[in-house]
Length: 242
Length: 113
Image (cartoon, rainbow over all chains, first blue to last red; front, top):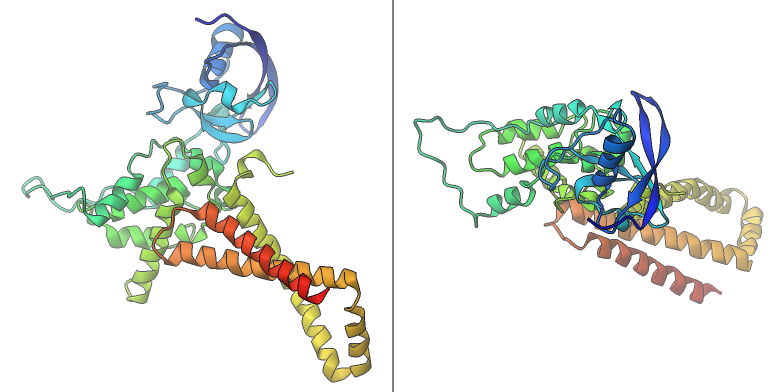
């Protein structure tokens, strides 16, 4: 373990629900230290009542996302030295989601919108049928593959100003998931998906600000997926299918 | 002050597109009113035309041309984003739209000054 070279002042959001304030803690600064390490240090050694959420620590589970110096980030893979310009570190709960306590948000609205977007599997066959062939070089498969590695961290949801301004907007993650299923040979719900994503709060609300694609820690491109949905919905409309 | 999560090129392109759109919407009624003077009050129209000879008005016209150009080119980028096969270089296209708008508006200024 590296020896501490200095102490870092860290402002952390404390409070329940909408009421809260930033409290400052002095945390030892190390060369190799993630934002999640900082939060964990505070909880382990300074104030055990600090609430936050994490699981895998390796960027797979998508549960540790927070606002770091005003930007949404996966904290387990965010090195403090890369986000701290002048010894200031401000950590807050994810934007656009209700806060439960301190740094833990209620993710229900985020996942409820996945269901509203019909971003759920629509079975096309039963166990008695042969398995559907999924050809990796198929054009539709490539579109699905482009967005399939989403870890559900809600960083894109927190980055999106359309979500902030429109409570009904389904958000980049749900729409991207709907797009991957729309292009999945095994999914029988193409029409259902298009109807779900082209209504109120659907893909046409997107203003292409690009925050989702800019901040996605998995380097996915929800903006591209949403553009794909817009085109598919418009084509369906012109054919009288929507 | 732009909040940290908005400090990326495509949000700034969005901001520029919205701002230019609002300013152009404010300009258009004035523009039509001035044009109407040609039919209703020729003397007032001539006086306004003389007013537009001032250098500061020429500069404002240059800014107007920039707003028009950046709204057109930025709008074309957005239409391409939504209607054409995906292009990965959105940041570069947004920067290109601004560069082209600077070229058009500066060329206009060089013509009129």
